[in-house]
Image 1 (cartoon, rainbow, N blue to C red):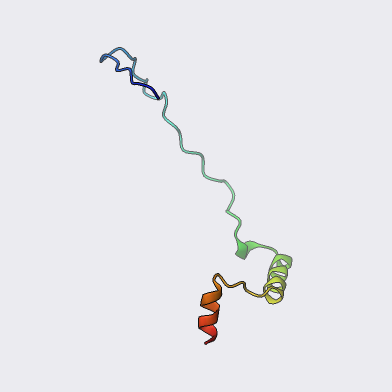
Image 2: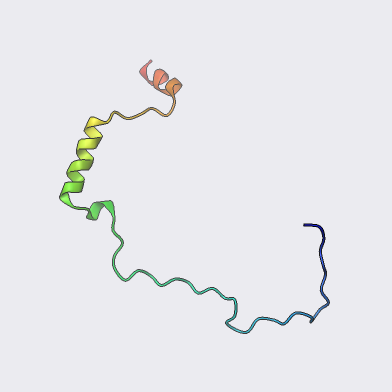
Length: 68
């Protein structure tokens, strides 16, 4: 940006009553899907994954401190 051009008052038309106003989106008509509403197969697969995958430590120093 190299400079500003200051306009005189009243040189720009104002917006109408509804011009430029954003309308909020409509709320979803169906309930939001959550993990609790998932199928039994999803819950079985999630449980199997949690048993098979060891939790990854965020920091090795924290893991060592916990083990001590």
